[in-house]
Amino acid sequence: DLFKNGYLGVDIFFVISGFVITKNLYEEFKEKKEINFLNFYKKRFKRIFPVLLFVLTIVFVLYKFYGPPDISLKKDYLYSIFGLSNFFYLINDVDYFNNIFDNPLGHTWSLGIEEQFYIIYPLLLFIFIKNFKDNKISIFFYLIIFLSLIIINFININNNTIFYIPQSNYGLIEGTIITLEYIDNNKWYLQGTLIGNIPYQLNLYEKINELIIYICLETNKIIYVITKENNI
Image (cartoon, rainbow, N blue to C red; front, side, top):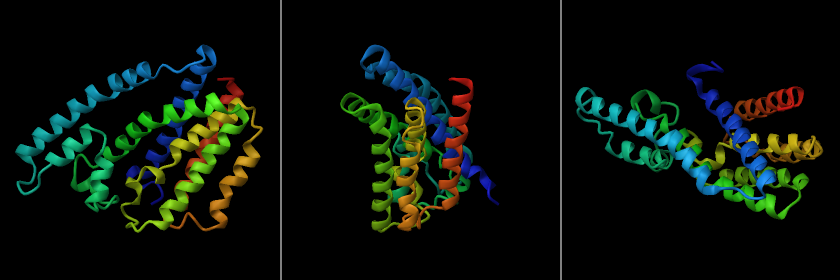
């Protein structure tokens, strides 16, 4: 049951994505002393949107003719195109664990979080790199995780919809941290790990399955070992 329905695959993908994006942006900044945001967004748009629009449109049309007549995907379709389907499902209290079987567009929530990450994160990373030393930056991202977990525990939300909130899918930030730890030759790994353990001590993972936290951390370790051994 641990790997049933592929839910953990999303968290692993988030960690890898956070690692790759951070590595590319960091190396660009160190080489050129700047980040070409326009080029970054153009690449993401070209890679995601054409295929996304094609798949969503085909599914929408087929469902219109062959799906249940009493169910409409119009709103799901529109929110998915603009990368906001996770908020749409959150507002409408759609059960995360049942949605993908009743709704052929239900899986787009994760892409929505990914796109929101692409929009906000490069700017945030640029500010940190520009104003702080490399060996300080990962601490800020650990604190972001810590604060996000506090916020999640104090908001009134159904546990079956909590994964639609960007802050609850912190695998992207975990991928970011492992990049920064690798760059800084692991100097902050111990201190960062200690900060990461604070939420455990305060029982802040109550609303998030601890298995997900474990998978994200283990994926981090695997990426770190591979990059170190192969000098990537």
